[in-house]
Image (cartoon, rainbow, N blue to C red; front, side, top):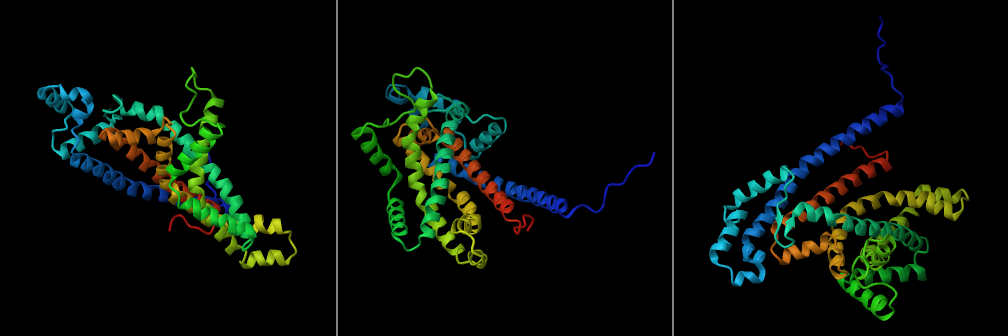
Length: 344
């Protein structure tokens, strides 16, 4: 039986696709090699801060009962948790438990850390994801409009508003939104995820409660993106291929969205990945101001209560999300621009 040999001459498009897949695999492997020391350094830093803290986790766990609890009971709690062991021993034990899926026990929530993350991570992702989508759509539209009308009143007003909002802390914007839209006008709830009288989680009720937090988080992050898109599109409008398209008599809308905006949005992908940590940090403050049951609120609670297992887990999870987002941004940039070689 004669066996057919595989074709040696592949189409050019197939060969390019294979090279890009190989390049993407190389980038993923390199990022994983970088992610391991980054995560190790992050977790070690959290343990070093925990060892330097003057707060006694046993007394923090006991709460008001610590004033009447005997020292023997407190010492037994420390022994059960192993907080009296040397720091390298504690870290090695934590890493071993982490590899088996055990993130420890939350002393502030009185439940396993994995349960805390599972119950609250989804709400934080919903807040951050919705706010990011709103920021991207609004910044592309407003930034493009400002660039197209560069120097006009619309451009000047948008830039003035962007600079003003950029100087405002996100928690101040949140408090101002509560004062105006919740307390004064009564249009939207001031906080929480559902009404006090609600017996379940209704989609409409949750959406209504998320209007203010999502809008506040989006407004606090939008100036960076609006100004970036405005400058990128304004520069792209002066490129040769855009001027040539305009000289051929193409409509202004086609030149703007079909030529200038497509070129300007390539660096915009990089901005999304590099700006994600600030977006996550803003979500922590927004969740605290609006009393949302996300990871931001429990992170603040863990920091105030010296709950280092929960604090280490949330910090590690945030680091993983940021590293994954940066990797996805690089791959998306390479997919959008065929001139970029992933294997360089």
